[in-house]
Image 1 (cartoon, helix red, strand yellow):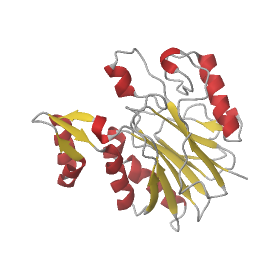
Image 2: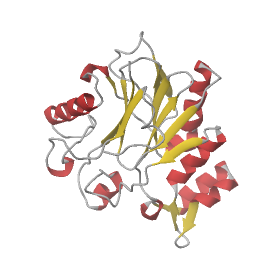
Image 3: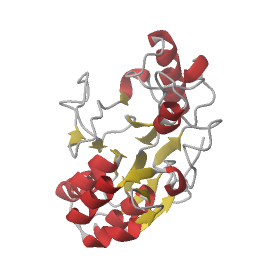
Length: 253
């Protein structure tokens, strides 16, 4: 389990970036696989999610999980929709107490957010597609839509490190088409390969959205196989599937 120094002293919230430890799943899913989208046993996933709910001091039925599709869609969770079965989005925000907002990742970036002026919390899932298409900006805008007088504190969780995020030249060109400034997030290996710094790309977007108070949990999901699931590592090893780590934030009573 990993915690943000920026968020852990805020007594109105509880948060955690969970590792893959302390669960019941076996094999490639060992052990705290929380991904319903994986081919792991539903029974094991349910036990793992209940462990997370207990740690977050809430109920399983009060966990909000998203059907993440690398989109830029944000949903505000209210009394009206909180019991919805599926949230088709890559970010959720709420002002409701004791709801555990959750994000699943396996190399992509989990971001937890807290607006301490207005007691709003949020979480988002940012892979490269969501990040370039505006998931960061849309999430911050949703906070501001709820109340423009906000003070957002954010934490960027464990994700794939720049040293292990190799991309091709077309990927590089796509980001340069979006903005020439993006060149600084790429490190050339040869004419066809680059390394991409997703973490700092997202950090820069938070700064542009005027979120100046944030920190980073500097853990690499690809290289740290004892603590994290990794889509890229599993693919490289020829595994048929992969587990998902969970990150969560709750607004307490």
